[in-house]
Image (tube, rainbow, N blue to C red; front, side, top):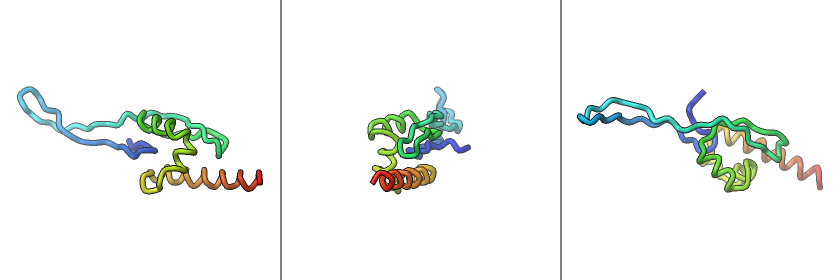
Length: 100
């Protein structure tokens, strides 16, 4: 399982620990990933994603998972998010056709 946010794509960064004596040793900066289940209105069930708190805040600001995915351009989404976006768009189109 990669240490990458499914929404924002934020991943591991590398850098140095620097001591008081200015000795440098390599280290990794890990993203604050949280396992969360987000409700999709179009799909009718929740979807489990590993997202950062910033990604969750962005989703909430946009009005939910479906609105975020449909509003965001594909070039800004990760592969997993693009797949989920296609599923949501297809389910929303099916729901529209059914109600019309």
